[in-house]
Image (tube, rainbow, N blue to C red):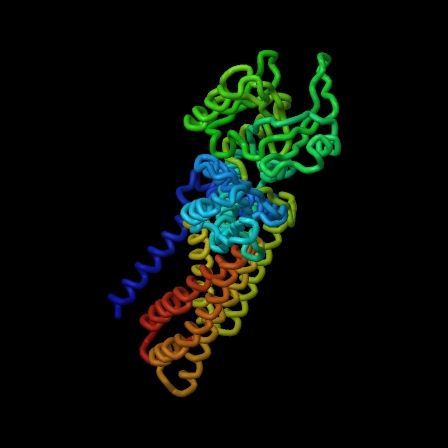
Length: 537
């Protein structure tokens, strides 16, 4: 008995010290302020307590699907040309990015066209033949689903990279489970949410397109020049007018561009803010080796023609190719802040599709501080009330329950500090709920011990039977609550997850304190009492 009790005492003290270390780490001093600072450094505060911005974003995944089929359209055109098969490739429905239509212009080449499509595209598209030597390619559902899922994950990675470059600490950026193709972004401590929104929202899709025609003063004039319709392999895009000698920018102009970019997306390896020869801000961008070689070949063969630099769907510059260009260029006409932000976005990569803001919520730091203060007051008041009730109702055994309750709280805080868990306002509510559930287990055990004592059993036997019979009920209640908390953690957002984490950790700590620690304290009390002495309960 003595050896068993000593072992339990050593284990309890070791866990207590370990949890204290988890909660405060190695303090820089032992003054009240130093210990409090060590504690706050270990316990991370959530958005609702620290203040910041909460966003829910919708990824327009159909744009990513359209980009893939656009690339396939251009690749197919190149393959048809190489195979000497005259045919046209178009997207018949502008609202359906998953369908391509190929029409053979030479009936005697229809068989060769069918063979080419089946050999190169059957694994990605369903291929259906129709009248007039026409084939319809429809993206396979599994392929379309995969593209949409990749677009969301790539958007998450890109946004995370941009937010990290801004220095936002402990952001939450993850897929939002309550909506299709949505992303949850929580940015604690953000002092300029407008700038962060602009950086997150910008697709920063920098592309270089060949200019086919233009400029025209407006879209109607451009369409009139194109006989009322834009060719399937081209597109119309608006851009700023020319700058006169005084530095004034003229009215916007419209350009006809080749639909597929010569350089885009992953072709860029770096970008940084610079200054031009007159000291004005600009962004210098640099291409990968492969893209630089490809761009060099293109510009060498098109000297005298125009190129357009397109950023986020607008022509930024249109210039004549005067010499071969290999692996670097620049974007001018920016202020200092825009040059820094644009270079950051280009370094972090382009979003695979545009995003829309579905929800925005901002929490001020002062409101978060008030929430912490009121939450702590509520936890202290609840804990003191529960401890007073246990002392009044269970007398000496109430001290046992109160000690277990204090240890329960220490274990919970130690776990959160050691694991870097985030404390949210609902998390504080979870701590308060844990306090109530902690004594609930003690109530079950103590009432069972009382029943055994009333049945005439000795104190030692009553304690044994009380813990043995209450154990099953305690396990059942804790497991069912943990399952509910796990569901909240899987499908909830940040604050709700904080509640689930504190609740599960508190319940696990409660199992240890209510059963193991309380039993050890009862054993110590019984050991010091004479045989048959009454138990204060």
